[in-house]
Image 1 (tube, helix red, strand yellow):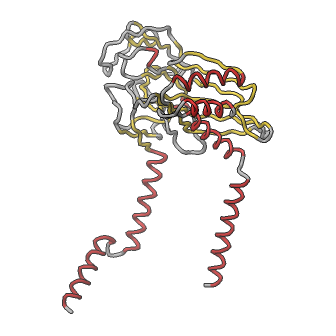
Image 2 (image 1 turned 135 degrees about the horizontal axis):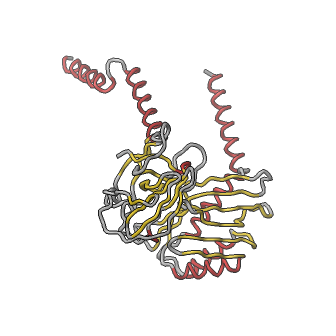
Image 3 (image 1 turned 90 degrees about the vertical axis):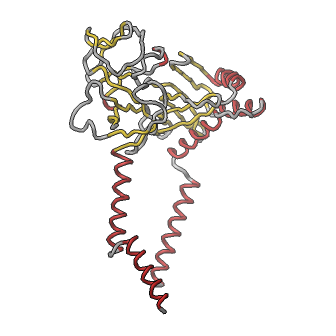
Length: 179
Length: 165
């Protein structure tokens, strides 16, 4: 008899530990939390897994990060921001499954070129402390349109033809990397 | 209780009826999406696929194109290539399937836009290609044009899109 009472008390304590004193409120809170996580990680903060060498040494393959889709709601992308650029746009409001991860070095209206490994913006070299390895890139200058940003990876030791870079339209920039 | 059971039964039957309708009479968008999935599967080669299987896959791939189809590819890795008509596409497919040991093709972020006449459609997607069992993969934005020929959706044009200009 006493052992039955003890067992019932243990069971009640365990249920209280799991569901609290008011199980319905706990379940409601859990449902709200789940819905909030779904909305945040599906539409606002996109978890991404980086693949490729073009952003070395800043980011390497296998690293996990988040893209903040609300980063450019109130202001435009800035130079040196690391952004994600979409390729094809999927139907509806879901996030693209494939994104380029690149750094902005040229802003709208600016002329961008590379000369002996240095990035030249409007005729003047810019400081790029994140470029750690030697680079010998040289190319003709290109001018960014009113809504275009020049994006390039940090790994300039790659050959220029194998490094995806160029002007990205603002509407293709999905967001800014969070970490 | 009886009424609730009847209501649930009606809802289940309505749901099953709707599912059957969409299964037997799929929308053009659904059909085109299925064609894209089949295209990716046909273009995918396993390392142990023998020459007969590869030749059959190449033929199946070519049958998905219209007789006057055009393929225009411009990639950093392979430069600019263009194929016109089924014969050229067939030659290229046979040669490619014979030369490549393994290939994995996926079409992601597929977006289908039907034209007003419902006889043609534009599909934009990102192709993800993995060669020879390597871990690295390449991605390329693509644009497909489908047209309806004798109640079948076939590919009339394929072109690569330059994401970064």
